[in-house]
Image (cartoon, rainbow, N blue to C red):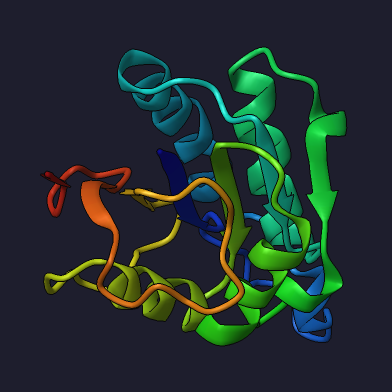
Length: 168
């Protein structure tokens, strides 16, 4: 059994005009959501074997922040340029090419991260708000080349505010 957790980066800061999109940092709320979400992870799930993340500042900061809160080494993050603003299909191609663990996190951006989450499970789920995750289980022994649409078992949809949380 493989577990995949798709994580949307934390809330970013739009207050400095002229900063390129790639370089936009997290705002105070984005940084503040990290300890809360890490504690929720620690209470319910095993630690990730591997983390694939977009190298954009807001995604990289989210990945690093969650791992630091979980007392895990940030060296386990593998930054993949192809995850920056990637489509669902591109995210899956990165997973297929680079995933090694059975407990995988992918930290990225909308629309792609939410579209992939929706494609994997056979139920309707809302788009992921910032610093949220959708966790699913796949009855696989390796990450396949083609996206296994509607083949994953939904495990959890978690948001910082908890208003939309769902469990499978």
